[in-house]
Image (cartoon, rainbow, N blue to C red; front, side, top):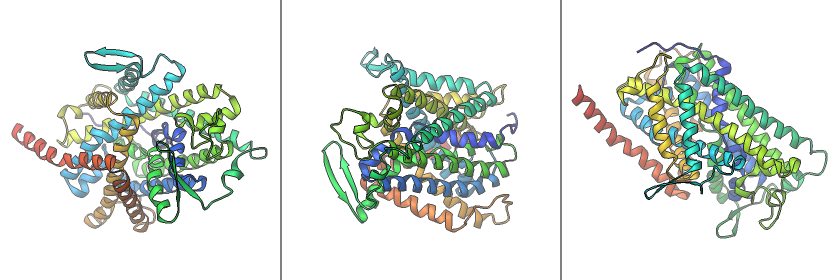
Length: 478
């Protein structure tokens, strides 16, 4: 096996963190959050809390990443703290649903919005293979995964160049949207109207057409549900740790890049939502004939950002936003595909995944790991909906974020003398706060979204017998 050469600098780390975080979520999930809470104030609190939670985790991960700058990142942290079983179950869940599920979901979103520009790319058009139907949209989603995978097999340089270009494009697009909105603050806008009442909140069930006023505990119940949208939009920030072995001066660049990347995206997300509340009525009218009249709560297909741009560009905004989301999702998947393969490579090198996944090609990249990831993510594009894939992946991710922060405490006690170039800021208070808050969110989801969260738990637990079967097979083979 060839030795991996560090080729990524601080800017690459920041681009990977922020580029992997910004997908399609920021442009669409605010509608669901408004349906859940019915309050601009509480929706903004959701985005702020999501950003703070993510930053708390990033600050803690920084210590682990600087302490163990090895390929595989989070997998390596868990193996060092808890041993092979926990590390395998994490890797199993990442392969089965977290990484590949998000890659598939983002690819599906990419194809969906490309279909706005090219209507022939739709879920209705396609071919029948016996009783099985593959839509053109699914085919394009799979093709995007294959294309990015093929690019990454030719070396890390191409992938990081794509990441820089697409991430800068996404950051600029969000910045332009924010600036345009803030130019309206001096004229007629909805900001004062939306924030005239900071105390009231109301949950709206769109299917049953039922509104339920929220107060006290009920606000926090639906706050947990609404947080899923914000947390999904902020997820994948940890992917850069999978590439630790390929980062120059990882002891400095990993913790700094993680913190800066998360901070930049959090600020942009909060400002983007303020922009929505400047340009659109929060509650809206379900019977309105215009995107502006529908507002945020009733935005057509959740296209809040499209409705916001409509106030400047009219119907052209549909195509402008479609292009932005196509760029955003393509860039997001570029980072996810690049990083995920390094995790499976690390698992293989530790005899916890298919042996072939650990092999590198002449470009010194784990090409077989890339193609294994590509195959499973492509199959996931043919199953379930965008929302289902994200629900399973987000809940499972939260569980392992908690376990990894616990690993920080375990390793402080288990390896007190191991050099730590960077120590988690605010330890032990900040990491403990993260564990408590995220555990409460998971509990909220188990109670109020049992279908998706219990399935997420089942996928994790299924990894335990699979580990022993895999271990037995490995021992027999040797």
